[in-house]
View 1 (tube, helix red, strand yellow):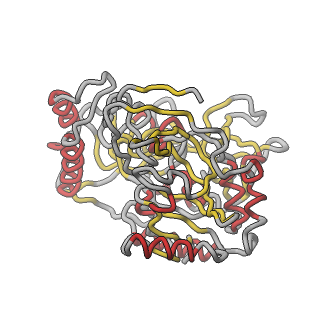
View 2 (spheres, rainbow, N blue to C red; view 1 turned 60 degrees about the vertical axis):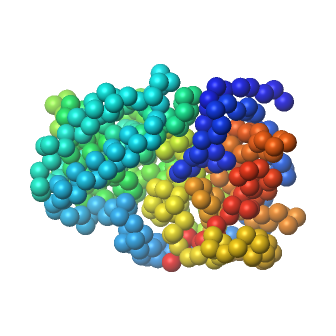
Length: 458
């Protein structure tokens, strides 16, 4: 297999929420197309559906999912209910939050895209742009809609910071990505006026002002109270501005939802309502169009069959740290899939690992006992939709074959022991793998690093 050398590149066993740096120089290898212990037939949802004990059993109905989402919002501050927000926000709290995040980033010793360390001058400029002196004691928020897929940043800048020179796919200022029609609360503006600090549906951060149209809370409430929804069910659904589907506007990821317009202009086409900005910058709703095959009329039924079919639509899709490049990391992968049935998950894997019901936990017991319990757990069939949790990573459990548990997940790389060192194999996509991946490496296999197994239900 051809190998290649990347100067001072950064990779951890798996990247999701908290990657870790390797040595100063590291050999990297392409991962094989078919990972060890996998077969071609495993690359389809039907194979795993046939191994599930009850693939068509409804895990939660619409009412149950509403209650489940309420529980998630109550437990995690990051997940917002835009129909029940505070009227005002504390300026002191915001100032402390922004300054704390700034100091945390500054202390990390990150590098610029020039491969030079981020200087004091760089941080002085970013601190000034935080515009902290203009934060009032009581913040009266504004509201808005996202106009297009856009990055949500930890600092108000497009400049990137990397843990090591050459880490181009892992920008530590990338917090999340927001897409068309997501509502936001605007609670602060940068000094240069080019950035809004926003509270999004599942995360907070800086977004380019040009990617948001300011509206009223009534506009958001009207949008969210629609009776009929088109929910995107493909990896990427194209949004057009004409019913003939020739004027491409942008694409949206799986799990997005839009109010349906009553009027349908062409067969096989669905008219939807999206937010827009007029020439003078003022908010207005406008009509756009989706191909009918790309959407579901309302949410899909929450069954194992649904989740497996949706997950495999993302098979081999590129990995995207924090939503970079319009793609998904491990936690956004789950957000997109579960979004098709109406479940709103937290953004980070560490929070997703606290959602639902714990079937087993292994992180607080001895390694020997944990290994025994893990083996015992995987000897029995598991119904519903199960999630496998690790520190900094999360996966959708598929089932056991020949005594090997398998999962589908968005992953950057895995390690393979070569002598006293580890060889890094770059995957950089959504894959099916068994839990022996990484066995014998310094990080250990997925199985060894497994901290728990959960089901996403109330």
